[in-house]
Length: 122
Length: 267
Image (cartoon, rainbow over all chains, first blue to last red; front, side, top):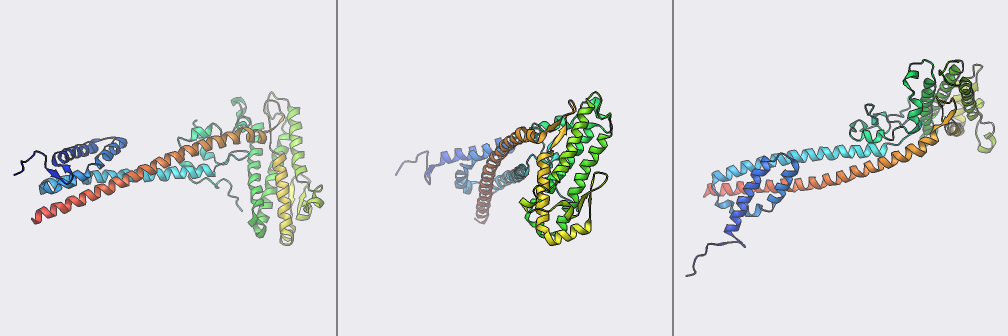
């Protein structure tokens, strides 16, 4: 009989490595939820994105209660991402308006015809 | 009739806040120093400031009128052309009125050579009248004399309009009328952009200064600003793509977990 090793292969990755990835995944999830800045959120989530496969592989081994908890946490991440997406879309829209306004603007004689451009307060 | 000059291109400008300061740097070039006076002169009624401001305002309107005249659609629309002509004459009369008023004001600006100012005012008057005189170019350019269109100089020095004549002329020779006023307004715009320098009383040709200093600076700053905004937009588009990718993956993960959870419950 073949002796049992401490590393049992699970697909092409060892269970211990998958487990470590899962731990890292949940740590990053927690960090993402706790991050204040958008930049930090994206950096963490991009790093976390590479670990989804490991969690998917082990999800069948998790208890239903734990899965529910993970789902609940992931929904929070999803909600935050949706909000970020909304903010980005609004920002893009605003920039597009600025670009269009700039294209429409030209200094006309004798007075530039768009006084709204000029901030009288300096 | 209203000429929507200022509304054109204004959409979205109120959204500018941070970029205003950049545009402030180029906002008026030479114009600003001419229309803004030292505080001790600011309260003077009938001052040179009022003259210059009125000239600038009317010239801006004339530029809009000129553009309307250049518009191809205008020729086909008789009412529009008539309104434009009336507006044009009204603006010219506005210029003449303020010049006449200033000519009678001998204390137009304290501590400035009044004779020089009066000479400048007379020159302004002559520039306007000669710009509206088409007699030299009528035959060469296939233009109409203003009097044949119904526009005549009155005893008070202003221009009067015979509405019946102008309607008839436009209906029979609309293209020629449009061409004539296009030439006249262009000539006026080319020669008229003067202000009276409050310090010397001499005329100043600010259009050239604005073109040399202002337009170049404006286009440079606008170009740089536009480039920066485009770069920012590209970055945001990338960020949006990443966000959507993350959302998609997160949603898929939740879905997988739900399936997994259901399977566990079934077992």
